[in-house]
Image 1 (cartoon, rainbow, N blue to C red):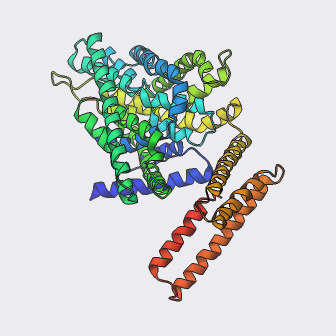
Image 2: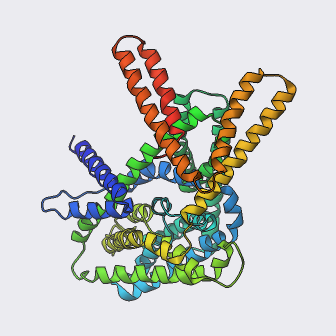
Image 3: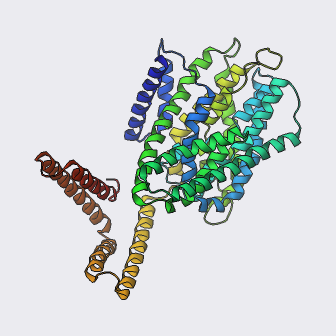
Length: 514
């Protein structure tokens, strides 16, 4: 019961802080980490120890799946070359550089120093997606950062397993064995993810029940992860591949009613999991620091040095690749390199990897430096989430890369006009066929033509549209009140009330956010 109470308290705390972050327009991951740190530093606060299996099995699959579904497969095709370079080249360079730096600056033995390098070699998809969700980055830039964080898991996981094997067994691992392990992790995970996506696609085509569709959507990431891990491949890669494939074709498998329900359910799940997981990052650090052996007082400076080297190395690699994400080819851009580098944060996955480091070597002796590796990993994660997270939006705004609100509004207006004209063309074809009563076609046409007339007003179109939406919401609120009165006066049944309320809710949802 005590564990259940702690989890519930954590959920309440995380939800409260995340709600405040949205109100204050502060990145929620950064504020959640700070809140976790604050709670952990309160005298008498119990130490929190989270098993890595809990993070890997319970938390990561739906978060990774949601991030992968948001990834644009179209834009991914345009940046696959730089993504490939980063997934392999930058991960290997980061692991080697951090390992060498840790061996020189810290009391860690060389083997454990390279375990630290492997843990911190890759960016974290959960943190990258959570921080980048509110930024108005160009499509290619956003996809580059997000795709890199999603697909670099296999490379970093192979490095981590090789480094742990060397540290625990004090043995050597051949490049051939490492290459074979990578092929099994990445290739096997990709194959299982594709198979799960194909199976889910077939099942979803056979059902139109919103409840079943919701259950399938919630179970899919867990199914892909468990199947891949059971086959000793990468569960993260399987979830990512399944998410990307289903995100590309999912809109063709469901209708509007099911899509609205799926979006609402997943929004709640992702909000709760992100809130809890970033709070855990902050809560873990003080407890880990208290377990450090004597002579480790310099860990803050060591963590700062590691974080600075990771950022500098990332800028160095991103500068020549910056031309691949620009709309026009030209010289490398320091602005693009800086933004993409600063957006690549560490997060939950490095922490889960560090927590899974064995406690003892093969001979039974405690693994030297494990506590310091945990502290440095968590400190770097906290630094990236807090410092980079809080300064990322100002950096994007000052770089000039952020899309202006006018650009997004203009693109949306042009797309709406194209959709409306496509609908009018279809109505003209129906009129020629005389397959539908003319008064029905005219009624739909008047609604579409009214939308075109609103969009054709260049000076007052946007204010007029905003006024229309505000007035329509006001009318819907009056209708909702009238419906409640009808129900209270026993003039309509509960079934009728629920159906009419749902119709009003869907209509209000179609007006967009106020």
